[in-house]
Amino acid sequence: MDTSVFTDFTMTIAGRAVAGDTSYEVLDPADETVAARAPVCSPEQLDQAVAAARAALPGWSATPLEERRKLVLAVADAVEAQLEPLKRLLTREQGKPLDDAAAEILGFGYWLRGTASLSLPETVNEDSAERLSVTRRVPLGVVGAIVPWNYPLGNAGFKLAPALLAGNTVVWKPSPFTPLVTLKVGELLREVLPPGVLNVVSGGAELGPWMTAHPGIDMISYTGSTRTGRQVMAGAAPTLTRVTLELGGNDAAIVLPDVDVPAVAEKLFWGAFANSGQVCLSIKRLYVHREVHQPLLRALAAYAATVRVGRGTEAGVRLGPVQNRPQYERVLDLLQDSHTRGHRFAAGGRPGEGPGYFVGPTLVDDPPESSRIVQEEQFGPVLPVLSFDDIEDAVTRANASEYGLGASVWSSDPEAALAVGRRLRAGTVWINEVQHLTPLVTFAGHKQSGLGSESGTEGLLEYTAPQTVTLRRTAPAAAA
Ligand code: NAD
View 1: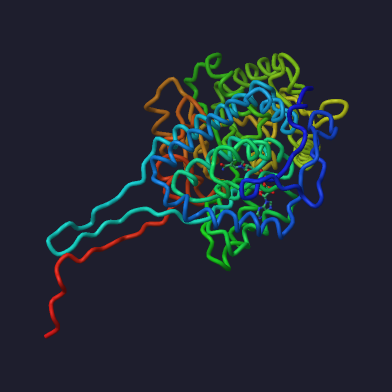
View 2: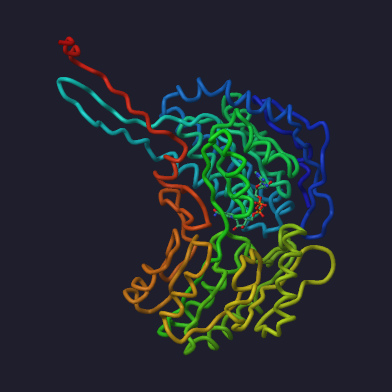
């Protein structure tokens, strides 16, 4: 594979290339070979990155919004201009098929452009002879952006666009499993943004906790698992560092009996299996009315048999490997649990052969509600397809989760589906589609799926604090 245009990987601090004192191996999940080495950021280098972001803050926050808008658009241009090599690099480190890698990079640009069209509201509280009072939004300061490995660039776009537009400076940390595209984008943007506005650091498991505890960071914008989200919140507590947490999900999809099975099967399949199931908003529990349960399961299994799984660079491959060994082992553990408990499989159920973290799309036929594959977030290509007789039961089971990220309802009767959808406890509820997101629409995790929101104006405001400025127009009355 030609990733030769990208060989050296350096961090970006104050607009300059910074090598780590040490480096570590980044593996290709398709064969476990070394894709490249990435720098390990030391505590001193993190201090330098934070100091560079702080030094750049007065200039960047005072830059007129229109100018920041232009530079956010220029970031999108610079990244899209490198689509070909970046997509190959993304496939190499993340595993996803090349077309999906391209979609992620273009999605990053789309997010930046969409977010750049937003504005920061100002509220005039009072405009009288006596007083002018205005509440405006000011940047929080230095934002630490901590990103997972499923969409290294896509998830970062959700953070960088609003953070920068609102006038913050950023220290961006990718997952240790997928640092390469992030490091390259940092390098590309040295030419685009003023030094220190966007710093990129990479390293091991210790770097995230250092960031959350760093007194020079004003906000942590975190995406990842709920378990780690709790640690981020605890790490940020001593300094009252602001946090937004976009966390895990165990999204339910409910299929009503009147559904057109052939029309929805493919959409449901991709709703669950896109990116090999490693999407926060994947369908992770499919509840199907008993009347259509077996026909839909057969349609899903037939479709699964047509989907090629393999190395993301191979033509025709639609699903790549699971991204990393710990996640692969977690998926295998869930599969083993299902085998041990005698669950039926309508498709898949075994890992692939040879090197690489491959698991074919797996459908578990109506496992008990209490089973691990239903109760836990699998974050991999394994879907429990459950049956229900009574919609009340389906709604109760869908809502009986610590998570509340997304949900969907599928029916030929949109009104009936909407009535069910409004009863689901999730931040985003779709009817007859799933995972449709735009930069202008806010999404937020309910319950333990998150805190705060991303995207849209509300997501932008997360990167600001309200500031009320009051001007007394008449001289205060003299004291009696
Ligand atoms: P993870 O929590 O292990 O890691 C995510 C990031 O946090 C990585 O960059 C990691 O290095 C860093 N990190 C780890 N420990 C930390 C700590 N103590 N303090 C600060 N940072 C720390 O998550 P993951 O396994 O990489 O990602 C998978 C999870 O992410 C899934 O649960 C998925 O649902 C969730 N996710 C959520 C969304 C969303 O928008 N809600 C989007 C994508 C993924």
